[in-house]
Image (cartoon, rainbow, N blue to C red; front, side, top):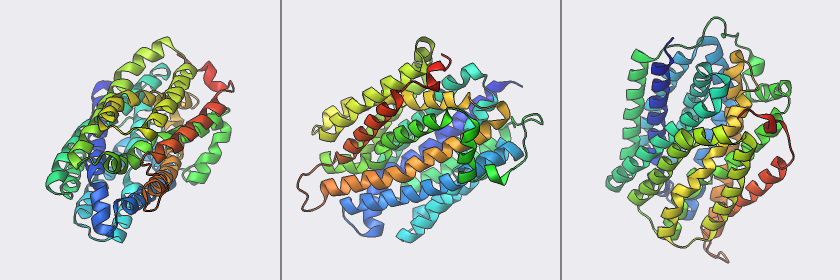
Length: 404
């Protein structure tokens, strides 16, 4: 089978998926303020709550989606997911109730299986030594989507803050149509495995970690680092509005700049880095680098310098594909859907916790009567978490023997 068309489809699908997510980020503060009828500080808490609901659903259903793709194939899971997400965005564009938004985020969280199945797809068509680099391209695709999504969402948001939701629905529909006609199936009779309920729920999936020596430590690191890095989607919009008074279009520009940088880091730079350094060296660099960036962002007062630092901050994105690749190499070819489901559940746990913690830190740093006005408080939380990552990672372990 020629792998190039399949690989291209996954990249295009992830770009479109990321555009759909990125389109709505610049308008979420205004949506929360309008629908919930609150100020910016409280809007951040509501936004964090919706993000947590979305992540809870991903945590509960991620392993199920991964195992279903091991049984029934990657193609049907991807197509069904896109169809549900398209409908969800349309309804979200008309929603005038905060509780309807909660229901819609529940449905979207269940349907948001694209990353799990796409990661399994990438594993299907990658040799063991290609996994880290190809997972980097997967991340780069999301980065490209975040270049285009926030830019378009910011411009549309300046006209009508609901317009990005309809644009997201249109993109999901285009992805569905494209996939229906061109997406090949990669699951074969040799790699197909029966659906097992014990492996297809978050508890059962996480219990399976015991079968992979050394994986628990890596997954703990994955959780903590992903939690810290999630400060960007969780708090960036609220932080930059409170600190610099940025508009939706300016928010879109900054997020697009970040997306371009992630695309370069994960799509190009990581291939050069993997060829010269071990996984341990790459991950250690990412931890130290992010610690410095988070502390700087916590106290920065210049919007210009923040824009300058935004692309530099993306260097921390070297960590996730490095950890993901090491974890994937611990599993057999017919376990990749299950492994990606486990990773998805761990990532969902971090996204469950991060929005609540980060937006709460923002609330306490900006509320009326606060002792200090500190919109960058969420970045101090992230810096503290990275210190914990360094403490855990400093002890040598399985990652030291990872292939270059």
